[in-house]
Length: 255
Image (cartoon, rainbow, N blue to C red; front, side, top):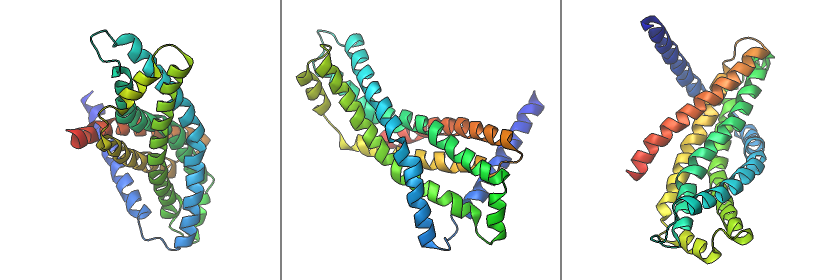
């Protein structure tokens, strides 16, 4: 038992060291900014804009469900009518749109990055870039990191807006809550800093998703089975790191 724990710790430290070395190569000075910019725009579309549909779908329904659950479970004659709207807004800003949505994107975007780079590794495309004298780590990974850091904060704001829309749909199409009460709660004691907290956290989460997923894909050894395993490991690792980072960042930003 003790031997297994010791062995796992060594493997974790070894992986962390390889990750740091890879990031050192990734953030080397780009050789041709124009080519990197083209890749950056491509990755923004591939990883970010193609995720808008799933963000919209999930956020609208979650916003609606949160509103119904809050209405049914915590509202009482002793509480103000605007409580449902207020609590719904706070949940959407502070946790769902900033953290839970990034966990969902880790599953979609993270597996995409890991499988793409893993496939390039096993088909020797990365080796071909190295032979041509290209810093493959920087060329392939840096645009992905920059693209996600740019796009995910925008997706977080979009997710919050879609969640609010879902909450209003509940008041428009059902008799669960009066629209005026929901609107009053949404506007009550709004703190702009909470939105900035969500954006700051999403930047860190975007870096975790892009860099960790890229590490697992870039360092694949083996065939197609290894690519699938790397994709799974990337999603699991990103999810765990996002939850840990969420705890730390929430304490720092709101403590």
